[in-house]
Length: 282
Image (cartoon, rainbow, N blue to C red):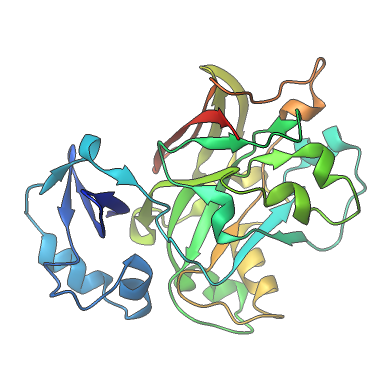
């Protein structure tokens, strides 16, 4: 299933993509779940699938305002330098363990919503990534069991403000400007993607392909990341693991290629879809 969170006529909802429409799931489930995260936490995806099976869309995809599939994640844990091509282009040393940082909920928007270039930087960069959404709580998860804890996958644009990112050794400032990233367009359930290492990720800026890599080029794959992160924190339904970007970022090009107002950036992952966002100024 493709699970989407949205706003329609001022009301927030969630549902299942059916063709060019969305089957509204919240009301059909009796209003038991406040949002998609609550439905996932309750283990209700099977109930949801049965409820919407064979139903036509209640509203068109072109009529809704997409929200991030998980609007209020407790944890957004991002992985830096997780493709060798990106590590090499940055000149960073190899690391025996994943490089991790966090994002805040207000730092990303949904599909179709403007990503905002901050007014105090001209070095606003794209980073196409795969995000895994946790569906089942766990601590000290083994790699063998890791994929059982994933509800599904989506695209992510880890919009990065490069000068602020490098003010210190910590990435946090450059990764958390309001509405600087994007997440969506929907959550594809894990039964449709049994192996997240068999995907291809592409990023396009104004139609020009700027990044492309198979996800099996990750240095630390998804099962390892889930297992490793769960050693120091409990992973709960709705938590996001943003798995890193391949080489080709604008900051490492000659000349550099940064996003600016009027641009459009797309992140496409096979089996998931296209996350598309216009760029606007603050």
